[in-house]
Length: 162
View (cartoon, rainbow, N blue to C red):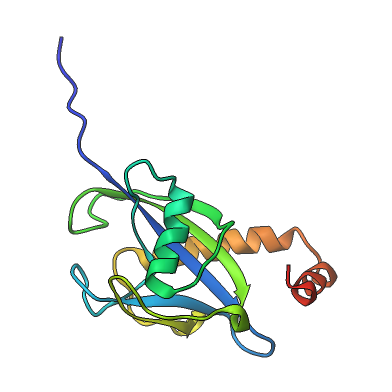
């Protein structure tokens, strides 16, 4: 009987945090990577899932460690598993997203992030890894969520700051 070799694979998480403000274009929170791979490049907040850790909890932890933003209840987007997406080896990333008022965010870089800041969504710098693809998927996920509601409901939710 032939044996099956199970290749090593790391689980990672990435967070696409959209920020909105009245009369301003939609923005997204990015970090400047402080170390390789892609040191000095802009990327989504994220990182490796710790042993015994739930991926949604890992996403919230990485977001807080790298940007200072504490947030629960992230929306799952999908997984990204293309071979070669990370030069360190085989990784599968689970992406999460959220939409928040920009004024509710207090951003500070931490952990392995050299900087953390908001960028206008349609004016992003070149991104590390496959993060442009992850952002596109998160945009579509948010569109799907908000298409369920009419504009009156969306305005009421924004006003109530739920």
